[in-house]
Image (cartoon, rainbow, N blue to C red; front, side):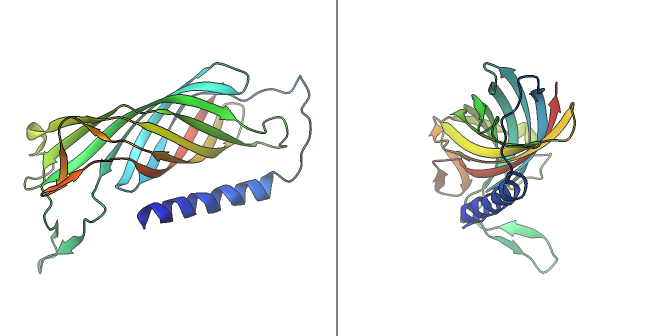
Length: 214
């Protein structure tokens, strides 16, 4: 259900941008300046909660970039339910670990319809692979007290997505994107809930990004 809500929200936003700002088409002249992002940073919303990310772009074509995106976010089991005791303290039944992941997304970003759409809104597609560092800390300890007991694991798999860039000026822009990650766990079994291993840490995510153009 959470995946459906994320996808629906991104589709609505993406469609609204396209319908509002991409009605007029034209052929751009050769002298028109091309916007390109060298670095980007922002936050993202995944099925497990919020996270942050930073991305570096290296041009490999006129409208195609190699992208290296490092992100950090929490991960939760879809069946986790938060309860509250009489004193207002929250807890999750059966939870044994807090789970965090740090994917390094290595892939290609390609702007589509760049020469056909008028204005500063440009759609793109992207895809690649994402080796991922997974970290777990004991849930029965406080957040900071549990850090020395952190254990690590790994996951890796492909990702693909689409989004829309907006160029505010020659040096600044922003984007929104919907991506889907498939990240099966490799090696050590990862648990968020007791006796329920997490086999795939991926899923849908929406990212909101500030672009630093050159």
